[in-house]
Length: 309
Ligand SMILES: [Mn+2]
Image (cartoon, rainbow, N blue to C red; front, top):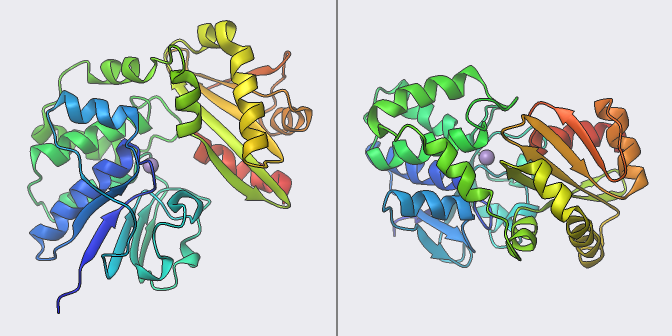
C-alpha cells in the first residue's frame, strides 16, 4: 500500500500557511511525490479575502490527521497551534520561520527547516528558485500575498532580503495588481461591530514562559490609533474575558499600526506593563504604550521569554 501524506499548517490557518502548503504540494508533485493539502478549521479572513479576490478554491478541509500516514507541517512547529488534531509522531517534515518553536516535540521529523525569514512561504518559494522550476500563477500569487502580509508590505522589521528576492522572482509569474497590499490591509482592518471580538479571538495565541501562561492578542490595522481611541475599553474587556476563559496569568495586545509604522501595546495588567516597558524602553500611558517600528508577535515572544525564564 502506498503511504498517504498530508501537508498542513496550524488550526485556523493564515495566509502564510495556506500559501506555503499550496506551493509546497505543487513542488513535491513536480518532483514526483504526492501529498494532499488539508486545513483544519476556519481560514483567516485575510486568506478568504485573497482566495475570493483571485477566484481560487479553498483547500480541502479536514478534521485531523487520522486518514494520513505522514504529515508535513508548514508555518508551524509547536503543539499549541495544532490543538491536538495532528498526531506529532506522524510529522516527518517541518518548514517554519519562528525562533521559539517545538520542533523537538515531533520525534519523527527527519527534515526540519526553521529559518527566520519574514514569511514561511518564502522558504517554499526558494525551493522553486533553487531548481529554477516554474511555479503556477496560483502558488506565486499566494506566496506574494503572504509575503506582503507578513512583512507589512516590506516595512516590518521581520523583512529579510530573502523575502524581497523571492517576491521579485515570483511576481514574474504572479503579475500582482499594483495596490494589492492596500486592498489586503483595508480588508483586514474592518473590525466593525463584533468583528473586533471575533478577530481578537481568532488571532490569539498563548505561550508558556517560565511558570506563566502568557496570552498575546494581535491586531494588524490601518487606523490603529482611531481604533484604540474609540474601542480601547472594549478591547480591555475582551482581553480580561479571554484571560479568565483560558486561565492565563498574563495578557496583552500587540496592535500593529501598519500605516503609522508603530506598535501599540494594550493591557491593564501592571506586571505586563512593567515587563514591556523594560524590554522595549517604552512608557505606558494609562493602558497603552507605543513603540516605533512594526513588530510581530513572533519577534516579541523570544524577548519576553528571556525575561520570564
Ligand atoms: Mn508565518
